[in-house]
Length: 219
Image (cartoon, rainbow, N blue to C red; front, side, top):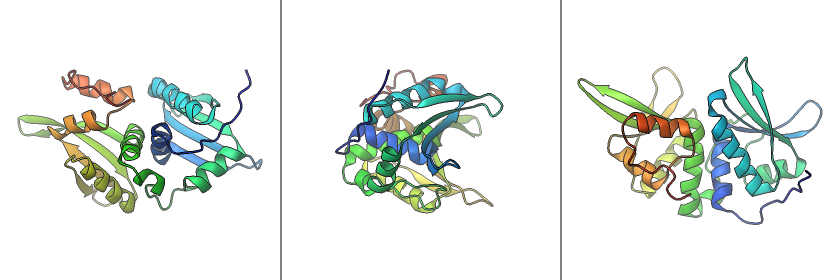
C-alpha cells in the first residue's frame, strides 16, 4: 500500500506528544547517502510502545515508519527517509538536527497548556521512568525525567508546576545529568494529569499496587 505524506498545517496534541518523544529518543540527520532521515529508538521489550509511536507518526504525517530490530543491542528502531518531514521537524518545529547539544521545549509547545501535557507525556515515556525509593522501612514511588541539559530540565520543572504537580530538580554527582523528580502521593497527580502510553511505566505502577490509577487519562 502506498501512502502520501501529509504535513500538519497546525499544532495538535498528537504532534505535541510526538515532539516529546523525539526530544527523548528521536533523531534527525542526513546519512552518508545524502538521505534525510528521521528515527526513533527504543528498547526491545518496548515493542508495544514502538507500535504506538509508529501509529502516532502515521496520524501526524499519513505514513508509517519502517521498524527494524537489533538483537545485539536489544533495541528497536523506527526509521523513515523524507526530506519534507525532515525540514518540517527542523524548521517549523525547531527540533535538533544531528547531536542534541542545546535542548529546549519548542515555543509551539509552550503556547498552550494542553500541548505541554502531551509533550511531557511523550518525553516521560522515552526519557523517564518509575522507580521506588527506600527510606528505612518505608518505600515510595518516584517518577523521573532525566536529561543532560540543564535548560531543558528547568523548563520541564516549570511545566509541571503549571499543572500544580510538586517536583524538584537534582544533579547527579560527578556528572552533568539532571533529574526532574516527582515522588510519593504526587506520582498519583502526575499519572492523572499527564499519563503514560508506555506499558513499562504502567506495569511498574501495577507492581506498586496502583491499579486504581488511569495512566491513559486524557488520551
